[in-house]
Structures are given as C-alpha cells and as structure tokens.
Image (tube, rainbow, N blue to C red; front, top):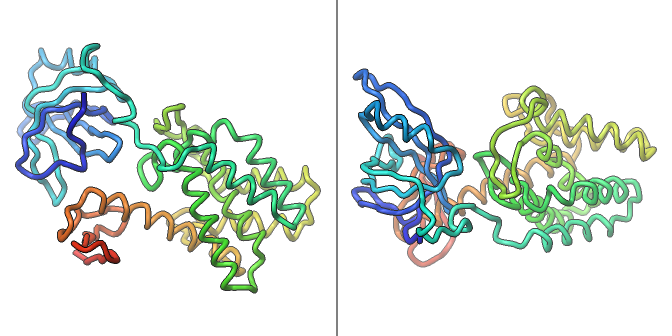
Length: 328
C-alpha cells in the first residue's frame, strides 16, 4: 500500500514506497561505469531516479522492468541542479500481496470526464451560429470515447487522465466571461476555437485508456496537432458546406493559437477571436503548471524550478492569498 507521494518528498529524506516507472534506461557515466536512469512517479508528479554502479547481474533483472510497471523503492532524496532526485539503494517489482491501487499512480483531472464532456457539448449546442454548432457537435460526438480518457500532452500541462477535456472546459468557462467583457467578440467563434483548437491531439498523441501518453503517432511526429487540426477543419468545413470566409477563419485560429513560429504557429493571430484563443490557452496552461507546482510546496516557501514557466520558483504564501513568483 502506498503511503508517501512525490509531493511529500524533501531533500535528505529516506523513502521506502511504491512508484510507477515512467522511463527506464541503462547508461554509462563519465567514470565508465553503468548506471540505471529512471523516471519514477505517482498521481502527483514524477522525478528522476538513479541507481549507480550497477553490476552485470543486476542488468538482467533491470531489463525485466518496463515502463508503467509499479516498483517498490528504497531511496535517499537528493538534489541536483535545483531539482529533487532519488538515489536508489534497492528496488523490486511490486508483488501480488502489496495491495497496489492504480489510482495512486495515474494522475487524473479533478472532475469526472462525463460531466466535463456534457458541459462542453451543451455549450456547443447553444451556439446561435448553425455552422459552428454543426462542426463542434459533430467533432465532440464522433470523438466522445477517446475524450473520456485522453490527456492534453505527454509531459506538459494537463498530461493526465481526462486532461484534454479539463483544459477545454476551463478555457470555455474563461472564454464565456471574456466575451461578456469584450462585447465586440464573436462569442460562438471564440468558443468554437476553444473546442477545436487541440482536438487533433487525439490523433497526435498515442495514449491508452488509463490516460498515460506513451508517445506520438507517425503523423503527429511529422505534422503535429496544429497542422493536423487545420487539415481536419478544412475537410469538415467542406463536408458541412461552410461559408469559405468562416472556414478560413476557423483554420487560422487553429494555426495561430501557439502564437510564435518556434512553438509551431506559422502565423500570429490576425483578428480578435484568434488573439483571445491564444491567451485563453496560455492562461489555462500556466495556471495548471502553477497549481501543480504549489500543491507540492510548503506554505511560506518556494517551489522547485518550473521548466515550463521559464525556470521560475513560485512562492506559496502562508495565509492562502494570491500566489507570487520570483525569477531565479
């Protein structure tokens, strides 16, 4: 039975507990000796683990341990380059009598997938624009099964069971309120962009029903979800006999939502709804990463560096007021 989670780990702490293997490789150090490089995790996060100076005899058993296996580890928590790390002393596969519960190891969105799906579908069904209603309801209903478990990423924001729905729903909730303030916006177009902008992650990412992404598809590696999304929207709008201007605007929103070429967008947003979609996306991604970092941080202290937030350390106040961040 698991009792210690990644969020509980602190430097110089000795831990004996169960973790899921997220990655595993045998490597050779600068001293010429082999070591085992692991990524171990649970529902709260993951961290690097090392077992130094492994013997040839150990390699045989190591090769039998695969990604997604549950292992029992005895390790010392150390720190390297500002990040916590495990120095593994002993490790073995979990056994039948260990009372393992998989929900301890698979991170999941905090809301039930069916409820999130129903919220998103209901929002689409309320569109006054019949074209946008048709394309969004079609995409949602045709992809319902995969949406129930799909993550929004392999490693970054919303990489969890139901993460894609959770990302979509929070963006919708925020987008609805933004449209109340900026009344010049085409509300249906903004919300349609939210629903469709990451939908091709269902075909970019390879994931199983436990919500764990194991890699990227062939097309996902060569094209990515942005180009896949533009292709999908182009095909669907032709099938649904969309007005061409509206179709191209939807495609542009997908194309531009990462904003910069180095992040996959060959065009920057060229009308207000596309601009808003980008900021809804980046806001929800950053809030997710901040929430995750601060969940594992003691009040009155700073988090570890958060790679997705430019290696900032975030401050968690003692009184629960607004979070602050400090550039390091």
